[in-house]
Image (cartoon, rainbow, N blue to C red; front, side, top):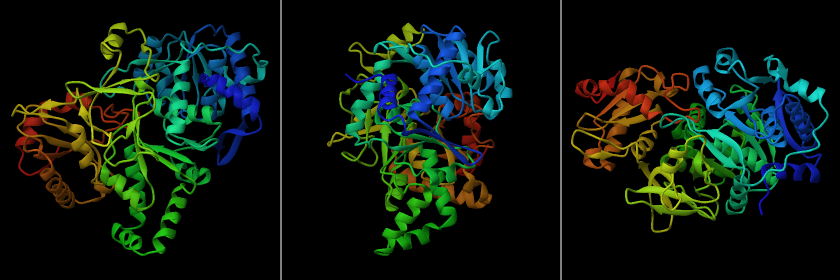
Length: 546
């Protein structure tokens, strides 16, 4: 039987006490913690939780950017038999408060944050606050005081595999955030299936930089390290990310499509596409060049590259393939613990999300919806029995909300979202996601959202990327028009894009137009802009400004 995450931690702590578990730079200097050192600190914090009356299934939230203290606090919560409530570190006070209230958290660990002053009001006055003073936040209690003032906890909680270990709140792509309950045994089932299927290495060097409050980072980095005995290294800041990546040289690297796009933009800002193409045509030289570019990106040792959370374009995958980087697309969601379909060394095909992982049962419903059943599926939504019931069908398959189809070789292709479909004035249903992926091949576009309710043909609402902002108005119009001329012939007549509307304001997490995992919030965009569609549609020209 697979072990629980805490059992895995204790295993490595016993077998490899002196192996490095956590690494993070502080003012440019790397600090390390072995499995034994991390275990000692976690035990002392767990005993500190007991001294504060926190035990027996109490809920403890973590509000922090990725850091060693995040992982240690999570281990301490498990040791104390409490349930973790991870919270995105970029959320506003108005978004934090309902999660804390709904989750019934009794305490919150406050770690590395950019602007806690503006978030503090989202924490109820009655909640126990435990800060990490090393990051400049001082509350009544601190992690440092709990470590210094307590002996290590001896009576570590033993987790029943069926008991809820964590409640992970979704990023809110489709509206209200929901608390997804995952049991202690879920993660063991997922990792013991994924590790051999994806040929993941043992004791890998991992980099953690995407939010640990997101299921993909939690499974792909934290749980991966626990089940393979890996070392987790952290980026110190956004500004130092490239430098830290070079220093870490991870064996696995996961990114969302927008990050892959940004990395390409960085390469092309130093080397034109024309010059790059010429170098890649030269035998022998191109081999050295590929190794050099991977080393300079921080990927000299990387064997597995993944993209998930949103569709990645075939064009972007092919571009990276030319420089020696094969990006495997993965597919999963919070509700199935990202245990669904993956491309990987054993089965890979551009434009698909791969094949089902071991133990995953799949069926395609009559409306095209993908439905999943596996040991990775959630126990349900916290305090939402009706919503939970509505999310599973009569055979207990999880309704993913995604539409898809298998090709003749058994690879799954995502064709859209059930709820994202909209009708134009012509009464034709449009699935926007596949069109958006193709449009995002244009490096001048940061975000795109295909809309069309109430107008004859679809329109593309776009935000400019950094390269797009550098172009003149005429250059951008020419560039976007050319993109439409390339895209539209590949679409059905009723899908063809009539207009491109350039937004005044870039969509960000702060203005609630994208989620913390960098996915466009279609419902928010529609709420803000739907009444303007007819006027934009009637404006002259293919490209118009908001």
